[in-house]
Length: 395
Image (cartoon, rainbow, N blue to C red; front, top):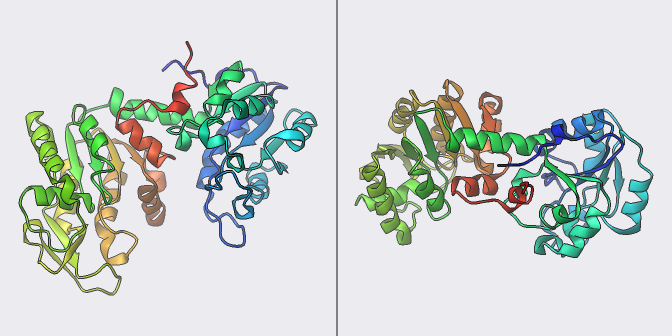
């Protein structure tokens, strides 16, 4: 991809608008409960400060759908970001019009300004060109560092680029692209892909696409139940997608045809209900009792998956192996996390549920790279061009 990155630009004295992803969770009192996304943006923000930019930060928060909802204001982010940067971060109550224009005009090199939620304006999610033009008027340089929104064509990441001569990817976006290319464009081999989560329908395009690239595929989570059904196994009351059984059969046949080794659970943890207090059993995958549901991969599968990954040089993982939020069904996801943490491979992880599990287990820092964008990461795995990245490409 022919994309300039922020570290290649002269930012001194320039109004530099950085599209960040500060879509952070907050409690009812308005306190940020997880600052991972703020941490991810710090390298680009610090670079801009060090190079004497007038740093303007633009983000969305939640889905206010063009309305000014107080609970989706970015105001609480400014003091937290100020503490993280060790310098003042000013906040302005709009991203357009007189408040924003006045605040930007008063900036000096090294200043940092956070604008209000861009989704307070209905045109944002419609990729409205007029909104893009008005945002562009605030800056001399545009930097997109919000990978998590790159699969959306919105005014703040697509339309704006048409009206700013100097534009580039931020350091986070640069890393996301670089690690994706390491994973699927020019990977060290063997290359293994792990897919989990609830539904095959949400990931079938990704599985289809990587079949032509990977050496091994490991499938867990509730989506594995659809594959077990495709093999003719009884799956009891387990969650599965009846309409995707033929698709699962096609994937199994496609893997065999391409000589891709495809691993499914050989044992599962079952219970009558998804509750922490429910009695559990471990049974062979082909012997799930009629009144029970599979809620995690079993220990034998954890061992099988670890062995399958032992010689991998690159591992891509998207989606948990079971209902990990409930303690009795977390062991499978933990086993895979430990296998990746102890691996010598390049380990690239994407998906909100998966990185939540990594934080919970204290293994986040043991991965080579954890993508900040669940949907965007998945669409890259599907082989799609992301609008927010395509807009940055040079002619």
